Image (cartoon, rainbow, N blue to C red; front, side, top):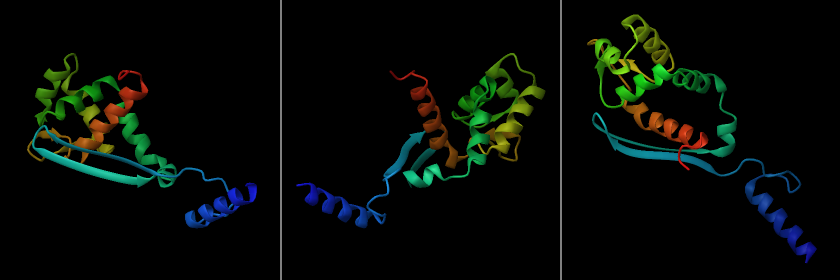
Length: 148
C-alpha cells in the first residue's frame, strides 16, 4: 500500500511540475469579482495564481493600504464611491476637515491610484478601481471581525 501511495504522489508531483519530495507550497487561485452600480455600471473579474500573489512586489500594495489606512481618507473614498465630488463637497462630507486637509488626503489617494481627478475640479474612484476598493474594504472588515 505504501508503494502505491508513493507512486501516486510521484505522479501528482510530475503533473504539478515539481519534484516529488518538494513541498507543494502555495497552490490554487485567488480571485474576486463584482458587478455594481454606484456611479455607473462597473463589472470586474480577476483571478491570480496563489503562488504568484505571494511573489508580487509589495510597494504598490503598501501605498494603497497606507492610503486607505487613515479615517479621513477612507471616508473620502467611501463618499467618492457614490460618485464624483468637488473638494467643497468632500469637505462637507467628512466634516471637520479644511479644504487644505482634504487636498492633502486626495494627493495621497491619487498617488496610490485609488482616486483620480477628472479635470473639471471633481475627484472620483476610477471605474477600474471601484470593485477592487470595495473588495479591499470587505476583506478588511472580514479580517477585522466585522462580518462575523
